[in-house]
Image (cartoon, rainbow, N blue to C red; front, side, top):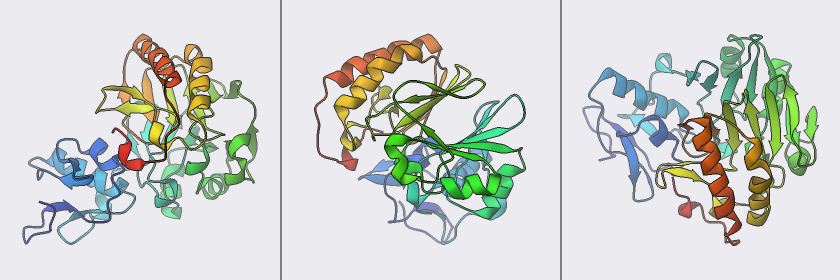
Length: 295
């Protein structure tokens, strides 16, 4: 079902790394088949065509094709509005393991970038047209590849935690310790060592939680989960981080680097996060295995 045909059908080529991004953007059209994304149904409406185009422009391996061609550049929907204050950057980068990145709009009109898409001066120009980007917030070392380039282009401050400083040694602001740090009015960094030593989540306006790779919404589990099989630093440290931080977090939107996004009532997220902290305490270290992640 994935081979291009004369009628220029949509398909996913063999470069796919099963990162899940396409399935987030085109559910029902793209699904996991034999360990990678596959187009399981061709679009029937304009809205479905747009969803597949968004998946194609986000795909970090450029694996989603329309016939033999990439999608038409004029159809690029990114940055894509998720909420009144959050936009999805798209154009995920192979140098950040295909992670999602976001733009957070502040009441003053400026924006903050949380992690980064692939580097492109044209993309930077597109983002800048929305308003001044004052800060680039890195959640951890795996997503740091283009931080300096975007920060320099925007004239922005680049943030990272000291535990992952080797990935961005020229950062402008260094988060330290395990206590929360106010980044700006309404925006707080919460160190969450575990996935990596310097993992951080960013909480905005008690509404938006940018969790990096510390936890995400799993469609398979229908719940918040940790990626225990790709915890590089320490699962026990992650458990301690969650136990320490869960009660401090209130949010209505979960916006991770990998895995799905979700909106729920804040009290529901609080309950689920506390349950996750208890569950993570029971987990034991295990070998790194990307195929074991539950999307």
